[in-house]
Image 1 (cartoon, rainbow, N blue to C red):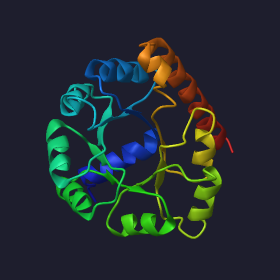
Image 2 (tube, rainbow, N blue to C red):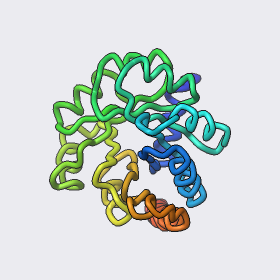
Image 3 (spheres, helix red, strand yellow):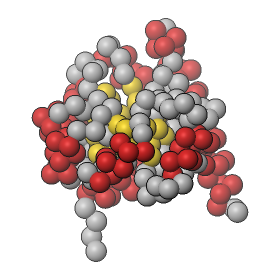
Image 4 (spheres, rainbow, N blue to C red):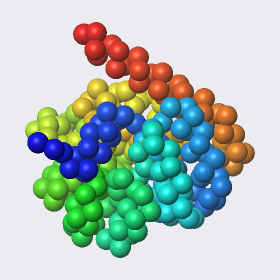
Length: 220
């Protein structure tokens, strides 16, 4: 049976596992920082709609056919429609709004709403969420994820807040479908000083760790 576009993109997200998420008030900074993340290995990229000209950035990065481009901080059905019209292939929100999930379904793209408790995550899942963005970062982090996935293994949890180059493998081992990097990749100091070389190097380290982990799993 042929898969829908939404299902195909969700599979790409699972396959790539890691996303780079940029949030800044400077459009050119967002572009150059994300270029560095891509050079370092990221193929899932997300521009939050709080970033100036986010729709333009989404459209621009969609020109790179190796990338899967998403829109973050989607807070309304209208924003969902505008983002997909600009080229967004998946949508992310810090909240779980039924209207936004319905819009994503009608647009045939994956939706990743935010939730922070087992009840909220289950509600998001039952509303049709493809993944659940664990937000904000819970106390306990990895142990929280393990505790939730014990009775709710069907949840595809995708944490962002609290994820860093040192702990993301632990989140994956706990059963997360993937993880997103925000300030731990685009550090405030590197962004302020436009040290894109350090962002690229950090991305390379992250993907070296991911490859090593994936290789160790395949050899087991």
